[in-house]
Image 1 (cartoon, each protein chain N blue to C red):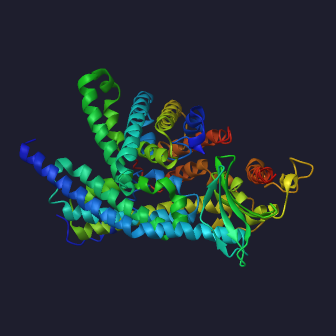
Image 2 (cartoon, chains in turn cyan, green, purple; image 1 turned 120 degrees about the vertical axis):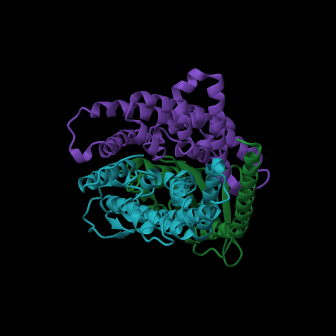
Image 3 (spheres, chains in turn brown, orange, cyan; image 1 turned 90 degrees about the horizontal axis):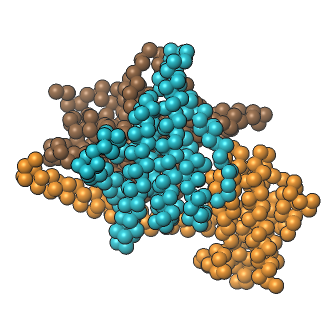
Length: 202
Length: 181
Length: 196
């Protein structure tokens, strides 16, 4: 049995079991909205909210949900949080909502969120589930920001829309187009492999 | 699976779905007015950018297949109209807002949405490119490379996207001048 | 706009120009996971075509005749994912009972499909583009055919890659992504193929 409050559930998601680089999960939004840092940050924030919210809720209701219907229940819980984010963002941050587009509602089938609900929140107490959600969410956000920096900086010469490379810099446009996303993540995973941990599964 | 298990399953699912439905309808009710308002503010901001001297803007009017708002000046007279036009770009439709005054002069152009190539075609949203269309008529609205009379510089590496915007503006102006005659 | 284009253009746009895997980045988890083997890629591709077309038609009808009349658009996300999930379950049972040969061919991929974002995305996009029923059907067919084409092509490449000398750290997933990037680059050439 785990401790009542286990800080490890928070820190694991950040690097050691980073949902993206370690588990190879939730790739779609990671590649699709990483062309600019602003979009990536928005996606990361939405992701942390949904993951933490879903984890807490699943942890609260875990005792009353019979095992055979747990997956539909988890899906409803996640869909609820995703819709909340979707509408709040449309109301308060319309430009961000427009640029995230269909990838925002698609969080509902993101394997990280359903995976954490099933693998962690349905077996742990509320505090640890919340910490796990925060940690995994932050891990995802860090990953998407890392990819976004590597795409926006060479691709447009900017960071968060602010020009850092001089005017004479010719942008390497391929980086902000779809192929750039695949190349960056390929090289990042190779980098992580070279740092010693070779564990890939989907 | 026993009967009891099925019934508890149905009850739990029902409770969860109802809670979720109620919560979402509350969220929807709370955010809907703001979403609509934001859309209006955004539209009004673009209209004001195109027509800085406009004092009052009408609601959206659809007529003869054209969508526009009427712009009134401070003394209440009709100063011009702002049209919504869709043009075929390189990567898909380009939605353009075009302001035209009473003498069919282009007052200003803004891009609402597009799916052009990032970094190349996406530069059609740059104010520097769009301001080239101001106060122009007929063939001068063409790209320099398309017509001898053309005065518009295309964006480097994005001729098709630039042409899409220019064509959209020119077609609208031609349609309006035909309608006046 | 897409809903004013003819059916051929809708199909080509979904099939190649905005390819679901390489341009829209959807359905990648199953793509990277399954494309290691040509045979299972063909099975998965066929299963995706079948489920996407059926699920999109059903969710289109759910949206048009259930959500819209009652002004419940905000339940779209929840309704679609549940529709797809229950459809997949239902279908699995039917196929296993009635067409065992088909079940043998791609039955094991059916449960995986529920969380394949390509299918949910097709359902969302069809609604976002305001397509009619027939247009939506063709659109779904185009999207899933695009998925099928790319996963089969890619699996054939990956089978060859296994015997190629690749730096240790790039073996497996990294080289798969880099190859996907190159394929995506090739597909970018279709952008601007026709005007919508």
